[in-house]
Image (cartoon, rainbow, N blue to C red; front, side):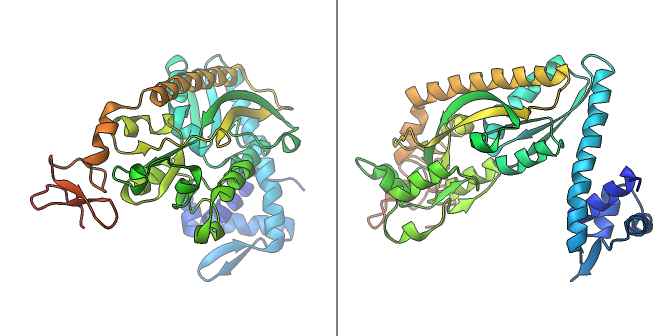
Length: 357
């Protein structure tokens, strides 16, 4: 049968939104028009594609199989549209970039900005997610390039990999965290506290952290708090005793302001080498190469910042170790004193900090 890409897009939107009303808005349709599209697609295929379940629309088993193939077909069609538009003229067209959680926080925004300064007429869409999801979308041709930790070599034989810098993993905590008072700090001490990180830790890093854990927390999965928003990770670390596993360059501004403190524990086995990934079998237009060059340049610039931070911890952050509240805000001079029970700062009468104790 001949497939109508318009009907396939409508079915994909319904599967993603789980609601006729939301899918219709996303596709700029009326709800009756979307309903007619789905009915027409089911008539042409002879398959019931969706069920209504507890107020939500979900694909049937056969619908799920059909939609998986439809997504791949749409990915090819949309990639072809982008490439044709790009080839019409130099410096124009569309690119879709996938960016992992940490590259997004470290250097991808700078890379895209640098690229757009040179190519202001190119439309760029950036998709942020973990590397597993991004690589799957790259293979469906929904993305042109991906910046993330590459999959294991045996799982990436269809990918062209342009290696970027190695990023040393660092543990960061709020000012006043009990770990800051512990002498001769070890990895075992650090992982005794709950960790915040991306939900897709590599197997080697997860194994290293689990081996260092002991006691009751050894039974916990890692990370203890999984998140794909780096800003949210850091916010949680600033407001709790959780330890953020990240990099210095992803937190450069926060470290410089003394909002988070990098612990002195550095394990060379805990880190990641990011890369620019593309499909080996796919020829991308010249503007994709220009974006890759901008990514490489931004990565190297961010690495320089990271090395400077590692060699020269900000004096402000060191100064604030003993004079900051658990909320991460500096209080009036002398407003804090350590709790005899926990060693954490507590508020003296007259403190201007709003932290409850």
